[in-house]
Amino acid sequence: MRNIIVKELNQTYIEDIDIEIVERKGIGHPDSISDGIGETVSEALCKMYMDELGGVLHHNTHEVQITGVESNPVFGGGKILKRIDILLTGRGVSEYDGIKFPLDRVAIEAAKNFLDDTIINLDVELDTVVECKIGHGSGDLVDVFKREGAPSSNDTSFGVGYAPFSETETLVKATEELLNSKPFKAKHPAVGEDIKVMGLREGEKITLTIGCAMVSKFVANREEYIAVREELKDIVSDLATKYTNREVEVFVNTADNDDATDESGYYLTVTGTSAEMGDDGSVGRGNRANGLITPCRPMSMEASSGKNPINHVGKIYNILSNEIAKDVVENVEGIKQMNVMILSQIGKPIDQPKAASTQVILEDGVKLEDVDKKVEQIVDRWLEDISIITENVVQGKTRTF
Image 1 (cartoon, helix red, strand yellow):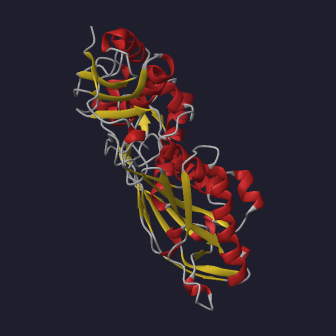
Image 2: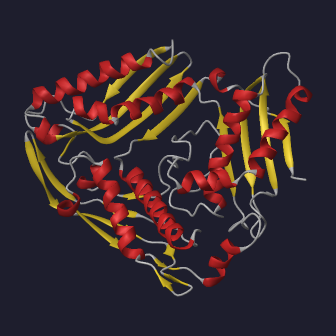
Image 3: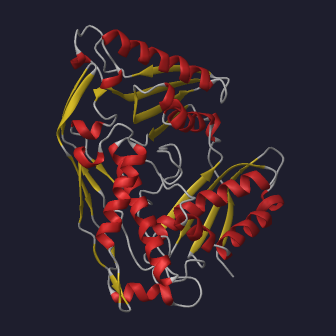
């Protein structure tokens, strides 16, 4: 029997609170780049181990550090003055049962492939230095993955999730995803990948403040820059009508100085990321496992990207909590909002958490006894099939930031 708890949530429904703040750091933000590299390296190591052994050996690659450097963007061009330093650390296994693995080469190749696929205008070979300092894991930890049944938790930790997204959350996420989509980049090459979207809802008004790095070689002058910036406002305003009937006001690059006569007054970059201009990045400092930063919601501070998907509950439980919450809200009638918190104990099977606590806000007229058994059944089923989370992560089907 699992310790599954279903309680009513003594909290105001998210759409009814007066102030809501939501943030998403785009794929080109240094923190998101770090998350992406950490997760991509983990996926590559999983594939390497699976190909050789049919299973995944212990590893954690969630300690990526990006050191911002220096560039000289100018209208119509510019150059990188110092290469971006990217440090891969953590632990992995380079030799097991007589088989040697090219851990460093695989990790560096994965990191470079991620950068090449993600930051369109970054010359990975010329503009970055990727250094691998991933150490070797211990034999005891490796043995965890050979035990029968569910793996044992690597830590006493917890994961948090909720559903559904509010209008503001949905709009913030959709905005960044649109502006960083491949089709959008093809039509608007001046828009870089370093896009941060901050949403503020005050009652019935939503304000979006967008920081967007522009790619200097695609912006010939001040007038073109301003035209792109104003077009972005219109595009996002039109997008907002798909997600909300509330009033929406959009700001883009509010630090710009339109009185400036040269590029110094504008958010110009050579590559499309502020990592070239001194901004540092680290895994876990940006979006949570659901892709957002939400101070008005329950959140875990745990970094999910790069942690191994076998027994690292800091990763598995954060993904699992969100999946459970979505499943319940979509399939149990009468629930308006749900929070999920799952707590592990180190050394205990990950499918047997110390507590799987759920809290629900119910529709008018619905009682807890109308839904509690259905909720419990869904939670129990997800824990019983927890290996689905691992399989999806290993196959790159689950986003962690």
